[in-house]
Image 1 (cartoon, rainbow, N blue to C red):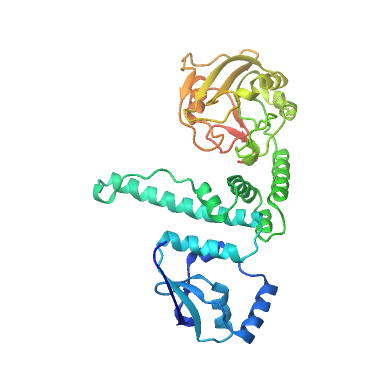
Image 2 (image 1 turned 180 degrees about the vertical axis):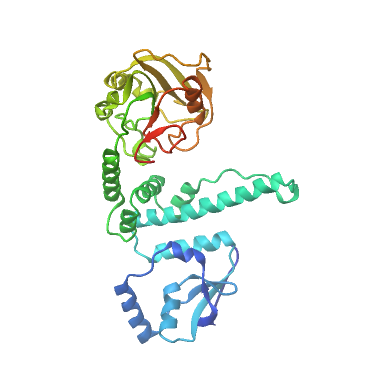
Length: 375
């Protein structure tokens, strides 16, 4: 923060405006507001608001609104001169100190701030990329390090990072539950449990495709029994998971032709159990591809930066095209659980004939049927 001017002035009420960061903190409840208005009518505005030069309110929006409602022409104000970053911090921290918000409510507000900060960072990165393409080197400074907006939000709103992650999970699965947490009607953990029940029900209701398929490509939502540290993300933060027995029980064997091929994604921790699924679905293991994700991944015994794509066959189903692709592909991971399209290209290349289906798909692809609650 820069210089703070301690003088108190009487400012014209109509000449002021709120800082945009005021939107990140909820207003008073209706009963609180009525009581506050009654106090202002009787006693006036006793504590000065805080105003950034020349007329932006950083602290005291309720006092300002009350002054306007009560017909006051002026309001006492302390004038400050802060940087743009410090202004936002002042608005939020001052409001949080005054409002009695729970950790759960602050986590939802932190998520709201994070989304805005992430959008601003992406916009800035886009501007720089366009400037580089146009060769406008004078306007392009050295690229800053990628911002960790979740960590920034957690620090600003004084909550653990995992709370911001839980808030994002809840909002993604049920906006109404997210609103209930923000209003203080539910805790993060309660809403998170309810959101997972909703997501699990959606998964169970998603209808399997009909007919027979020669090519089956599957990325099951494995549930892991080995608990990661509390601060580490887990699969269920992103989508509803299933036990091995639940995955085995899916009637995939009924979808497969007598001669069919299965490409099954599996991670190292669940590799042994995946063979139960292969057998339950009526296939035999034949070979595998390895996806080297390049980036570090959390693990108990090593940095598990790869996944397996197991190649399994039912009956006789060798490739139609005898083209041998390298069994190891190095490609940096992007969004959680999203697999490189290179592997689909490999499948389409060596198996160009027959009906094909992707199980637990995120998107529809031309020439493929899909199954999954994220479609």
